[in-house]
Image (cartoon, rainbow, N blue to C red; front, side):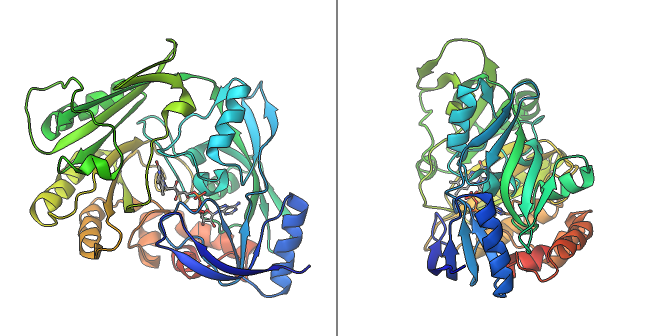
Length: 414
Ligand SMILES: Cc1cc2nc3c(=O)[nH]c(=O)nc-3n(C[C@H](O)[C@H](O)[C@H](O)COP(=O)(O)OP(=O)(O)OC[C@H]3O[C@@H](n4cnc5c(N)ncnc54)[C@H](O)[C@@H]3O)c2cc1C
């Protein structure tokens, strides 16, 4: 088999790139298996690019870069068990359209829906909701192409294997398809409003426990919300009459059976039409999962840092909730968490700022999002993830030559 000449690959925001020796885009699993086996014969490392929405070097390779963009669509729907099997390259947006046509919904989603299913689900991508796990918790089966071109079927009969394979950052093989636990279609009712920071902190526990989804963006200046394209909630009713300069853009979402509606600060629609918001590639994001009991203290500390030391850093803090899960290298492994994210502005030297945020969040044994900027090294991963060594041992057993590694993931999970 001859691979096409490769070339430059860049991620969505443009802070990661590589020159791959070869590129290939299989159209079906059998062809993917041949390509993976051929890469092994040619002594090439290989990585898969999803939609390139990670900020970290989790995709790049100098060997073979695969795109599964031509492996798309839902191949099987089990209505009784509410399970769907979907090709790994399918975008979440396209999956949602197909789910809607079957009267089904994803249990939760994040802020965007343009990622490939495999890319998003297996990096621990999450939405918000204190009782809802990250997207990987919906994975009940996977097909993993191994270095010799064989297919390892993970179906949940071995729960350890399933929990190892739910979050992998591409290191246990190339995922050709996933089987997901979904749910009956539901409508969501979203409310947006603006409150001052202290009111947000006072209402933190109540809002998290009384709504399916609660999250907020803390904006240090009036301009901050523009940077993340947030809705202007200036006219939305507040729960407080205090008028402070630094505000939180608040959001709660609950299931509703009311008809579709859309007003400036309230919207009711099919689940997947509510979750995504718009972003433009003007930020480099760091995000850590902090044990939920430290959430308020952590956000106060990062806010103080922005108000008193890094006063030029204007992107909002995003704050969300995710339930703990059993996936070995999920940032939420056995830990109900809040996620706290901040962003650096491309083109400026934001490293001192991100390092200071990292230093604060380390106090809480926070675990970074694999796809967002962080400062973890090998020992940090070992210390933060009780199953890290088990994961590495399994990875080495499945891929002893490290075909599915690049320097970044080798350092973390090799
Ligand atoms: C604007 C924006 C908004 C975001 N919002 C959220 C959010 O709300 N919540 C959240 O948690 N994250 C969020 N993210 C992060 C994003 O969801 C993750 O980084 C996700 O991994 C990106 O998916 P992707 O398809 O672009 O994967 P990529 O970034 O292309 O790849 C991610 C990893 O998956 C691997 N991979 C991809 N496909 C396969 C396959 N078939 N087999 C094996 N490995 C594979 C890649 O090799 C890589 O290691 C956001 C990112 C951006 C840029």
